[in-house]
Length: 184
Image (tube, rainbow, N blue to C red; front, side):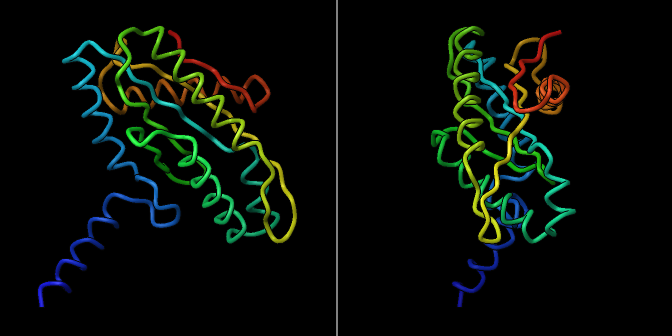
């Protein structure tokens, strides 16, 4: 029976490329998609963006209410991210409370890509700041967000992620619940 084999192959692929908790892309799949987007961007002289999201005070939630409640928050965050994005964009969970959104490289200028990324980041932040229902209680969480446009200066997936990560840490440094853009 080949259907069992096909089902097993699909499960292996899912485990290899998707986060088991949220169902979002994992780091491995994200890096591959960023590399593909960079190649397209370079070939067509387009720009795309990375949005790095870190949930503010997530450790406090985990420590206070337990990991099962933290996991439920992560699942709800993933659903909210997917509700904001276009089909061609990619949402990924790196681990813990860190998420990345890859904005498809289809803007003709750096400025347009940056404006689009800021718009998407604002929509994400607005959605993530809405009330969550956890343990039959209402909770509000904020997020610190960093944005990096590619391929400006770098076109290696890890380097672009590092730029967005640096911008996210700028956001945390400014008091959290803000959006910062990477600049050298």
